Length: 341
Image (cartoon, rainbow, N blue to C red; front, side, top):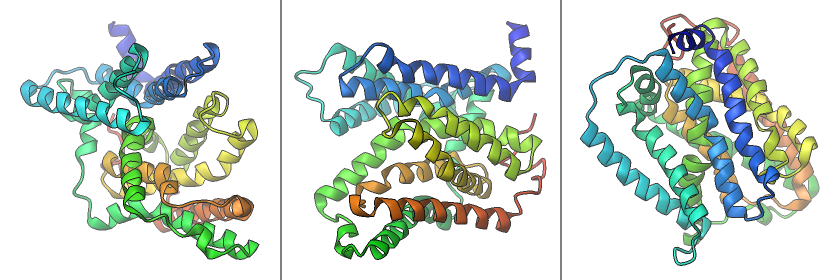
């Protein structure tokens, strides 16, 4: 066991990226291997795969710093159980699952996904030093109001500007892109935000990509180089989703993802580095990205110009933050977004 721990400690990034791909891709390809036709089962299985970045980060963090700390078990378990029930109910509500006809398979998958989310959220109270150190970054919330505004609104603004460009270049009526504001639409948007953030990607990915990998990369490289490395790895990680039915478009759509996901990764780094390594803020940012389309409709007739503007605006924003932050300069070793070996 000691030799394995030493191997992990001496190869933290290699261990992380390798294990994350293995764990994630196994679950991502299960719907294909077993010809899973039930969309709810396929979504929940893929959601477990999407937890790979967080689960691997948690396990490795515990192995790297295994020291046991004092823990308030009663408090943690009480919060954990409450979250488990609430998140399970959230999944049932969002997916429209009837409790009268729910299958054992679906029930188990819901509970597993809820357990993962509840554990991550309460992990800042964990007994292992490494796990607590990693997951307590979710509790960094005193970062200034402007960063909440940035995290929640920058992507919807980029999306809407892209839609406006699409409307004006195609001559489509502006009414086609007006936000769908109603009580039911707002309720749906809020429900989508919490479900997607807790179950589908943001929380489970950010713990790993930004919580574990980015600080270690920034220990070795400048934010510019660290982000480029992470951007390529993170984009490739999505590949199976374009084949298992989760994302449309196949390999061509996957290749197109590189044109905007790399720029987007710089925005994540920018927010992370300016909020003392807050995983809460990058999780909110990721959640806003994944749910921006809930209230904003993209008409089919403007999809071409919209996509072009979307790619251009994201990359312009990336260039702006690279220059403004002088990301080619290495961060000081005592910066809170840099891992201390």
